[in-house]
Amino acid sequence: MSNTSESRLLLTADGTNMQIGKETSALQFIAPREPGPPACNPTGLMCNFSVDDVDAEHERLTMAGLTTIMPLEDHPWGDRGFAILDPNGITLYIYSEYSLGVIAESMI
Image (cartoon, rainbow, N blue to C red):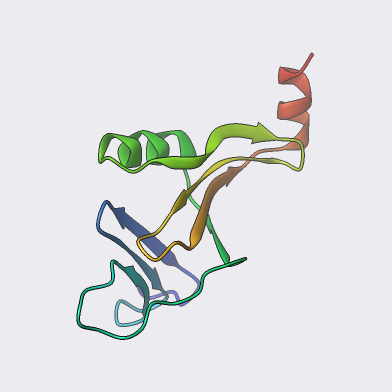
């Protein structure tokens, strides 16, 4: 990945790895292991991730055993998305953007 504006999100049943820019830059959400650092308090924390195909990502993650805490659905603000909890209890909102015209037409 040569362009620093590129990012990649890899979600698995045991953790999440978000790569931002260079392959050496990553933000990881990993299931806590004992003994280890104290657990975080994720109350109110939500990370939003834009993906190219939210339907495919939803299918892949639910087939891997992850449970959604917010169903996959279209939203009036212009995206289609769903939410899951990472192993530490942080809400991960995964979405694809849609034009508001497409959503408005589907509601007619």
